[in-house]
Image 1: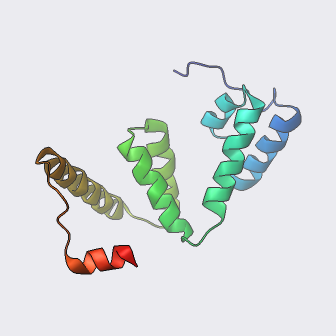
Image 2: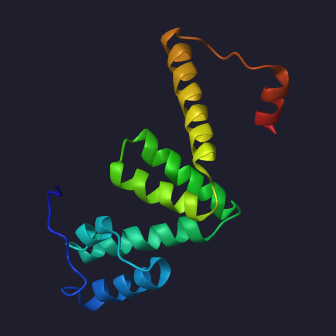
Image 3: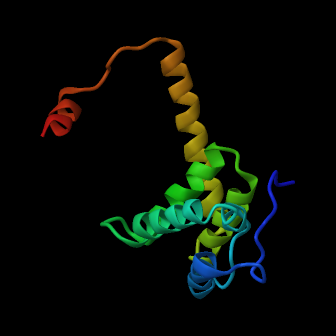
Length: 135
């Protein structure tokens, strides 16, 4: 249960209504997280503008950005985000097998990072990696 009420589409006016209309044009709906953010129109506007900039511009392929969004919500255990971004991945053509493969990659790197951190390992990269990083 959300700790704040959602500002419904029927209640939206002014700048909130404008943002809701943009979201409906983009997604076909207003995600519930944004309906809660609408309790403070400035916060809603900042979140929406940031999302449009980050996800809509730049050099990364939109599929890469969506996979990064999905991995982030998985790692943050955000049920709402997991459902939303998994559906978006499937809409982009990714299969259940693809998503399970991605989860296994996350599992491996979370696990090996925990081991490396737990061992207090110092830098253990080869010269080629160091050269690439310093370029």
